[in-house]
Image 1: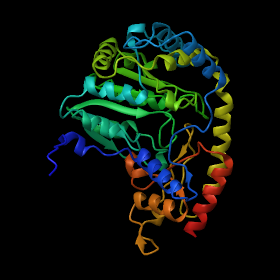
Image 2: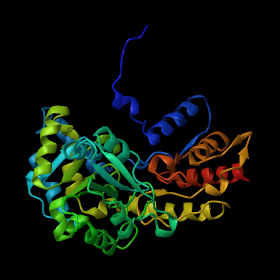
Image 3: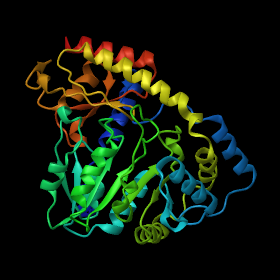
Image 4: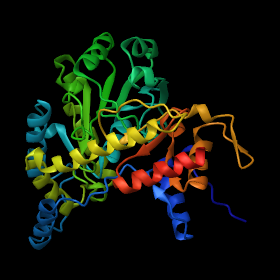
Length: 396
């Protein structure tokens, strides 16, 4: 008889839907099925050679000791310069904390700010882990629904309606995972007008996709003078530099929050990987145009996948301005039956695509929108074309 009792919080925790779908796809592949994986948010490029060379040099220079909890000073200087160059933000070194991926940065922020019952506003769709990170730390996610008509972006009116005396934070990503939507300077300024009436609310601006941006440039919430002291800017190198497995993320934050994150990290993981940190210095100091070839490729893939989606009756899609995802509404298929199984929601639909078309996508339910699915176009053009052909065939 097994007497092991797991904690209530781990039993309530959902498994990451993106990772679960990737695992399911791998399992089917190992059984000999020809699965095309469009579920993971992972660039299909190799890490650029100039960054790999810097890592090799660091190995040869015998970087092998514990790194400072909040990151090497010269890496933090490179991040400081990057914030100035790309975002017009001036952070002191004691306002910057380097972590094991932006996911750890987000967890740190939640841990040092949320008390039991604090409300955190999440415009839907949101990145899959926001909700569970908030809940793990005793917070209450307040989901604000958006749709294709508003380009999946929360309006000032919606924000105002969601705020209560218990509201502690607002979390969002721009460019957004999963919708690819980008908040414009005007849109962020109009949200800031609402937030000015509620000085207790801290904003988390997740900008991990900032360089994969096809629109009219980028703007950070922290650039608004009144918002700088209450915004945490989260970033990392996973997406733009094709460095997902290197696990380096970082924040620029009010000093009080940065100091608390460093304190927490000192007890949980200590400093991030020393070799990866050395490589990231080289990545961030390089001119941004060194990774432009990847951004250009994502843009041409976006054109390709949108053209192919347009040919599938029942799919409704916005034109994403960043990241490498499309987030089509597939509710036209709900209530239909395939192979004796009724499709009730996006979860059923994405499982149908996996079984009938051998294409792995992710249900929008995991992102707070049960009518959509997320399709990653961080894949070769041949794979995108083949996947969309399979989906169209399965649905006809």
